[in-house]
Length: 282
Image 1 (cartoon, rainbow, N blue to C red):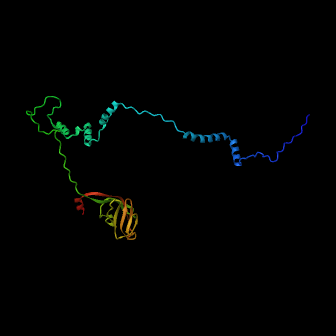
Image 2: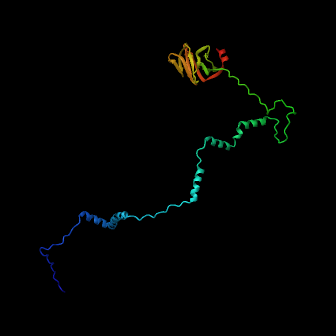
Image 3: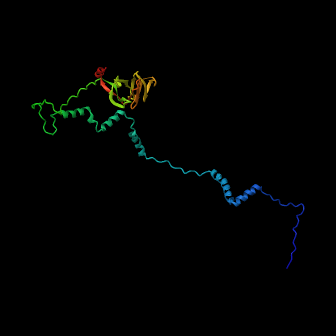
């Protein structure tokens, strides 16, 4: 076995310059390592080349465009074109001309003309008209029938009769009775001025209805001391002089002797009365 002694590297001579090593910044080294690990070095180089090369290619002068010869027009077509344009220039027509043209196209226009209507009416009223296509009838020798016929005459319209003046008067339907004796009586068509429940016990007098037939007004007798039940009293419930009842309301009126009477409104309405009948009632 052959042994070799280690050799010593020669020392650099004093005064000789040693080559200096330039190191890149740490930021650039880290960026290079990241791009190398992600395999982005080649795309980055290609991008830099494209950024430099594309402006240079675009700045170069383009080739001259191919000149297109102007279209050659047909001399015959040029000569005909003014005439075609002259025919198509219609302009604005008068509105009366357009209306007349539409009226001529109306299929029903002639049927409603005064002359056409008069001719059609005359043909219906003329008894001598030839409807079967035969020879005309001689009207000079034939007698004329003067009797009216259904086709040639009509009954005159009946004269309009003037409407008789009338007056609307209030009416009510009520049910009255004595509360203590449990007696009830229905009275229909109570007129203004009539007393209720009856003349022997005049507890209230009917005055009239409201304009909308929504309520009836009563004048309460001075002999009535207390008013209960439905309705509205004026000037107050303790001093009831006027009683207002609606349809379906019931008013209980008590006299000083203890008798109680009830007035129940069943219906409120107006009736039409002639002026003569109204005067007779007054």
